[in-house]
Length: 516
Ligand SMILES: NC(=O)c1ccc[n+]([C@@H]2O[C@H](COP(=O)([O-])OP(=O)(O)OC[C@H]3O[C@@H](n4cnc5c(N)ncnc54)[C@H](O)[C@@H]3O)[C@@H](O)[C@H]2O)c1
Image (tube, rainbow, N blue to C red; front, side):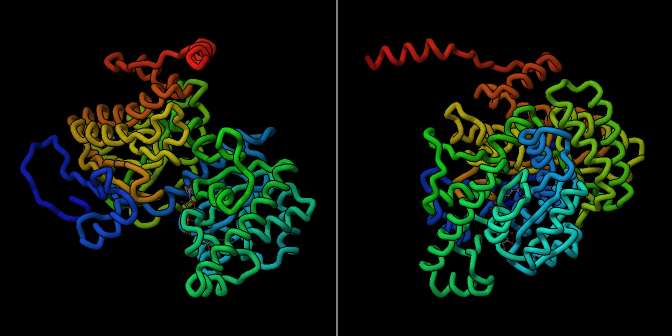
């Protein structure tokens, strides 16, 4: 498949992928927004996207799981005390496509979730779906309810139908402690409807952004300055705030907020730099997915049970560094059925490292062979992972050795998956962060219960995870250095070039001498 065009069926051999998908692959000098507009209009390229472009979209449970893992990570990293902390308040905005997962995730993490959403239709949808429990349009009633939820240590998701700036400012004027704060308005498109300015109705904004875009931009930027000012006040009172990959801090700084540190980074961390990168990706933990091709809920039930049993065994032997990840995902998989996450395909997601992914896939393959699972299972993953994606402001944002703008890892990953037995592979330019900003790939592998398949899954999953761990170890990320050492102990044929750490004082001396 060439950017959506089915080029043809070419003879190969039985171990080859059945499909090779590329989207938006262009000559690097022709990868800006205008190039895309022209080539896409000509019908010669397409916007790849990430998970969906790899035929691995499984509905909203992927984002609920990822958000749950992030919030659990945040709670542990930023809050002291019980784990998870009952009664902790998580304040954010957005009940849209991805942001809509926040309420459900906060409840699973045991927090009080408080989410502002300006669009009544989005609020209604998440309320009907059960992802937020209660909706408020009046701030005094909402704040009373928040006080009660915190006092009673409830795990509950409360929605404010209104502007997030009004909510932050009301909390600043109240006695309520906000332990955790973030934002998920669509600030990657701030002036075309991604962010709604305070003191305007939803309808007024929608009219102005079409009729008078210049004034609308001014309103957005003025609103962002009030927004960040309220955040800063709450942070001074103890709130832990982080950027959720939506360009909130970038747009606040462009609006004139003084939030840069002397080293050029922002005063608040981003979720991949602080949380997902060091806690998950560096250890090889990422989004392992599967789909039961029978389409039968009983197959999904069986796979959930098997995955849970495998993870129980792995928790018992996991090193201290990764045990918590296993425990979180064990809790997730035990509750996954009850949380009714399935929309469409009978599919599941959990986070695991190479060992876990291989063990779970091998156990599924055995169960298919025995007939315990009725039909083949397809395994895959999304882009929010250790190896498949080079995206300097998101997946690879915690790589600091200067290699963050390279994309060898993603390309190598796709090539390596293809000859190790993937049923299909894909490689894309574009995706959630924009055309020209990311190279990412995916795969699908059909587990059919055969011995050949048992061999293929071992080889391919080992590479699919450890490729990225090796690259992160070479960048001297501590978790990855640990993980790659362990991977080499477990697999003697794996030989990775390891980084040698220089003594900083020697380097400083050498540099200062050369500038004398
Ligand atoms: N959830 C994640 O794990 C994750 C990861 C990476 C990036 N993001 C980013 O998060 C952002 C949101 O993603 P999405 O798919 O939910 O987008 P979306 O546009 O579907 O949802 C954003 C919601 O914010 C609401 N909103 C905008 N301004 C508001 C305001 N001032 N007050 C209250 N509500 C307001 C909008 O009405 C909209 O429903 C994107 O920029 C995305 O790239 C999320």
